Image (cartoon, rainbow over all chains, first blue to last red):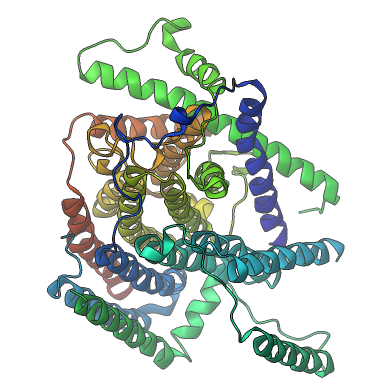
Length: 118
Length: 164
Length: 328
């Protein structure tokens, strides 16, 4: 099993190298003629207006938070899926209870408008 | 095994180096992004401990979920406008002393405990074994987790929506 | 299985990696982009690129060579470290998906880089790393549009990861394992597309959203946010992001083939050929959908995932489990 992950580690390392290769090639063969205007931030050809960073918007945070909660829920479902058939009905009902509690959470989020974009 | 020892030192080095960047970098976004190699280092350590499933979970939840959450918060608050946040204050020396003492205690305990060597049944960390565990003897804990998750969700929504 | 000396294993790993990366780069980035242009041309009643090379096959090669000699422009005030690292993170995370995809079978065993025990969980985990790369790219550019595109892209991808996860769990339950090879072998009598059509639809739709393709491509449509999170990336860097996107799309299609269409199984023809045929049929459908449907708004996108797809996926999981466990 450790061998498997050794392979994966090598895949990641060699892969990072291969992905960086084109970048290295550019560094060698691309032209350099930098002047201030070329480095301006792109805003459809106009000078950028205002700061680049927008104000806080709770909805992004809420979506990623709800995502994390459901991701943790899914984490519990993966091991169950592997032994679902062998553990049979009692385990299935336990899982249904687990899911029901979380569906309650989703319903709450829905009612409270946490899933709205505006 | 030499390979495993080498892997361990490499992973430990990556984790510690990234961890240092996380706590000392004045640029908040750098700090958050440095979490990713730190968490991936921990993932590697889990794999060395034969906990494949936990390693996958670590990447999925931590590197893929929590890091995104943290980045959202940083990128959306004004403190991230390139403002350099000083990472030290007058409590530095006291903190260092406490950390040093804690490290000394932990190392002393770890080196003096007579860890069990030799043959014995290695607990299985495969997904199947984990599934059988929390749907069997640890069922109550499992259902309790769903309640904890529910409370987290409700609490966060309450707090976040109160700001409107 | 006999243990080979470690340097032989390392060599095998490196060679395998190079083969997969090159194959993916050629099949997805080169042929895939060309395919996209020809298919979109056909759907729009025009001819796509046909001049470069026989039937336009070398078009993307020409484009790549052109891009390689473009200047490296680092926008002023951009965060150089993050701006540059994002270029590596996105394609690398997309390519890491390919470790667990079985391309065929030989007498020696399945043709897969490594059949991990946690196969589909690994796939879900590496897909989630792409989101971090996108946020880094959007932020590192110091550009309002890029940042906004990156944030919305991340919110969208994160929302659609849950339905994908639920479908993976449903199929894993039917096959009794997280390993992709086991899942393919579980389909020798009946492909899961027949017993799980709902799962397939959920997966397919969520995969389109996950890869930021139309009709879910609001975050990078030219008429909306310039090019979304990679607006400030020029030349080869842009090409690498495209490699990441197309690579992820092909990976999702390949996973769908593995989960629903019996992977490499098929009579007469060699297994790899069957796999490629099924893969390209799905990719064609991906492209067909892109050039046919109008775009969704961001709020419609997110509503669709949380209020429709996830409840349906959960119901699908419970009903399937009920029939498999309780009824049998």
